[in-house]
Length: 91
Image (cartoon, rainbow, N blue to C red; front, side, top):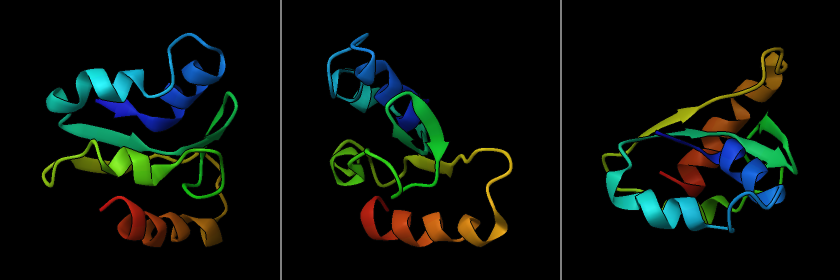
Protein backbone atom coordinates (compact mmCIF):
# COMPACT_ATOMS: atom_id res chain seq x y z
CA UNK A 1 0.00 0.00 0.00
CA UNK A 2 1.15 3.53 -0.72
CA UNK A 3 -0.07 6.87 0.55
CA UNK A 4 0.34 9.89 -1.69
CA UNK A 5 0.36 12.48 1.08
CA UNK A 6 2.89 10.59 3.21
CA UNK A 7 5.19 10.13 0.21
CA UNK A 8 4.90 13.85 -0.59
CA UNK A 9 5.76 14.75 3.02
CA UNK A 10 8.83 12.48 2.90
CA UNK A 11 9.87 14.10 -0.38
CA UNK A 12 9.33 17.58 1.07
CA UNK A 13 11.61 16.74 3.99
CA UNK A 14 14.12 15.26 1.48
CA UNK A 15 13.93 11.86 3.17
CA UNK A 16 13.42 10.34 -0.27
CA UNK A 17 13.94 11.65 -3.79
CA UNK A 18 10.86 12.90 -5.66
CA UNK A 19 9.10 9.98 -7.32
CA UNK A 20 11.51 7.38 -5.92
CA UNK A 21 8.89 5.42 -3.99
CA UNK A 22 6.50 5.14 -6.93
CA UNK A 23 9.33 4.21 -9.27
CA UNK A 24 10.56 1.50 -6.92
CA UNK A 25 7.24 -0.07 -5.92
CA UNK A 26 4.97 0.42 -8.96
CA UNK A 27 4.85 -3.26 -9.93
CA UNK A 28 4.01 -4.27 -6.33
CA UNK A 29 1.28 -1.69 -5.78
CA UNK A 30 -2.16 -3.22 -5.15
CA UNK A 31 -3.74 -0.39 -3.12
CA UNK A 32 -3.11 3.34 -2.80
CA UNK A 33 -4.49 5.91 -0.39
CA UNK A 34 -5.06 9.15 -2.26
CA UNK A 35 -4.85 12.40 -0.36
CA UNK A 36 -3.22 15.69 -1.19
CA UNK A 37 -0.55 17.56 0.75
CA UNK A 38 1.12 20.95 1.15
CA UNK A 39 4.63 20.34 2.36
CA UNK A 40 4.24 17.97 5.31
CA UNK A 41 0.56 18.81 5.89
CA UNK A 42 -1.27 15.80 4.42
CA UNK A 43 -4.71 14.16 4.20
CA UNK A 44 -5.99 17.17 2.26
CA UNK A 45 -8.74 16.90 -0.33
CA UNK A 46 -7.17 15.68 -3.61
CA UNK A 47 -6.74 18.61 -5.98
CA UNK A 48 -6.23 21.20 -3.22
CA UNK A 49 -2.51 20.74 -2.59
CA UNK A 50 0.80 20.25 -4.35
CA UNK A 51 0.57 16.65 -5.56
CA UNK A 52 0.46 16.04 -9.32
CA UNK A 53 -2.04 13.17 -9.48
CA UNK A 54 -1.62 12.83 -13.25
CA UNK A 55 1.95 11.63 -12.62
CA UNK A 56 0.68 9.16 -10.04
CA UNK A 57 -1.80 7.72 -12.55
CA UNK A 58 1.13 6.60 -14.73
CA UNK A 59 2.14 4.20 -11.94
CA UNK A 60 -1.26 2.61 -11.29
CA UNK A 61 -2.70 -0.52 -12.86
CA UNK A 62 -6.36 -0.75 -13.83
CA UNK A 63 -6.96 -3.04 -10.85
CA UNK A 64 -5.10 -0.91 -8.26
CA UNK A 65 -7.53 -0.23 -5.41
CA UNK A 66 -7.85 3.54 -4.94
CA UNK A 67 -8.91 4.80 -1.50
CA UNK A 68 -9.54 8.48 -0.78
CA UNK A 69 -8.31 9.29 2.72
CA UNK A 70 -9.23 12.69 4.17
CA UNK A 71 -8.60 14.51 7.42
CA UNK A 72 -11.11 13.82 10.13
CA UNK A 73 -13.37 16.84 10.19
CA UNK A 74 -13.23 17.54 6.45
CA UNK A 75 -16.45 19.50 5.81
CA UNK A 76 -19.24 17.46 4.24
CA UNK A 77 -19.42 19.75 1.21
CA UNK A 78 -15.77 18.89 0.41
CA UNK A 79 -16.17 15.11 0.66
CA UNK A 80 -17.77 14.68 -2.81
CA UNK A 81 -15.20 16.96 -4.47
CA UNK A 82 -12.34 14.41 -4.50
CA UNK A 83 -14.54 11.73 -6.07
CA UNK A 84 -14.92 13.80 -9.24
CA UNK A 85 -11.29 14.93 -9.21
CA UNK A 86 -9.94 11.40 -8.77
CA UNK A 87 -12.23 9.94 -11.44
CA UNK A 88 -11.01 12.60 -13.90
CA UNK A 89 -7.29 12.40 -13.10
CA UNK A 90 -6.42 9.00 -11.63
CA UNK A 91 -9.13 6.48 -12.47
